[in-house]
Length: 268
Image (cartoon, rainbow, N blue to C red):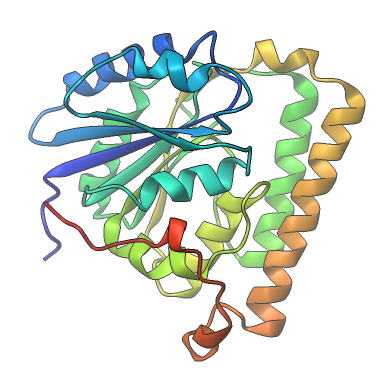
């Protein structure tokens, strides 16, 4: 029987969020305060403290179960998430994007799904039947096509992998994180594909409420660069997973060790 989780760690990667970070943290604190039968900690990771005043603004909120950490230069969302996970203490670990696009009340739904299904991983999904979403039509098409690619390449029978809200059993991360390479785009897929390849197949989708309408101002050039980067990283993950067998335990000597991302076993 699986261990009953006692502590939830929530990682918030933040980049260029000086205008919203205090509101983001406050909303997440309120949402988590309604959780029952589980304590929580929040770790905000500022992905580039030299970029703006996100770090200073976040530090203005002082709570016992809130930590603000970061590093000088931007290194990508994937790196930020792993940086926070390496400093977590929970036996359940989640991450949620800053910016208030995703409603933090979805975290409680994910914990419920974790308990109902004895899950290894629970992911927020825009395409869940009861999700409430508002995002541009062209992103819906891009998301649909990308998920077809993911299903073909990795056999992941999920409808959406890119929402910035995911929950992991700690044991999964202890096995997966030391093997990972992607620090920016497609790090979600690398985590999920490697986890499944290691036998963590109990991956379930949960509904989310999100509003991406504010992102519609993204320029076409920047959007296509983002798409190209995600596809490149995705193909690279497939190559390492299926061709090089890089993630296999037999290739452990080839894994790139980064002391800043060393995932420690530090349960409460």
